Structure formats: C-alpha cells, structure tokens
Length: 63
Image (cartoon, rainbow, N blue to C red; front, side):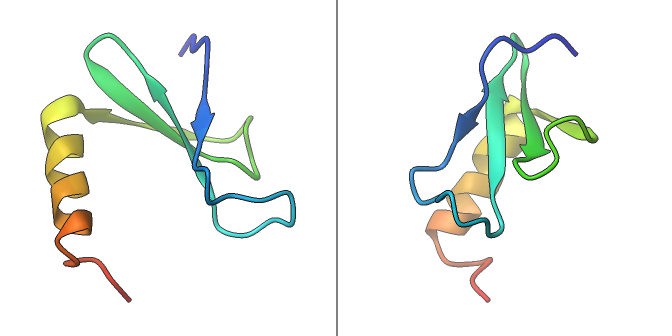
C-alpha cells in the first residue's frame, strides 16, 4: 500500500495514547495504529467508513 500522507486526529498528543491515523486512497480509507506505523493497515470502503463515522457521531460507539 503506497500512501503519500497519513493524518492523525487533532486530539492525539505526543504523550502516547490510543491513536489511529487515516489516509485517503482512491476508493477507500486506510487506517493504521499511530504507535505502530510499520504494522498492519486496514483498508475500508468509503461507504462503510462513512457509516462508521455516522454511528460514532450519533454516540452508538461510546464506551
């Protein structure tokens, strides 16, 4: 997977924590652990990613 630019949440800090990074691909979104940038990456269809984001915004994944 050749990704030019990964984005990290503005809520992430240099102190560690549970952070993910995202990258826009042509037809999908790539997701990786910011603490392990050389580790595995997950590729998600844009439609599925939009559904996950909508659920998060609605509070369906709050812990």
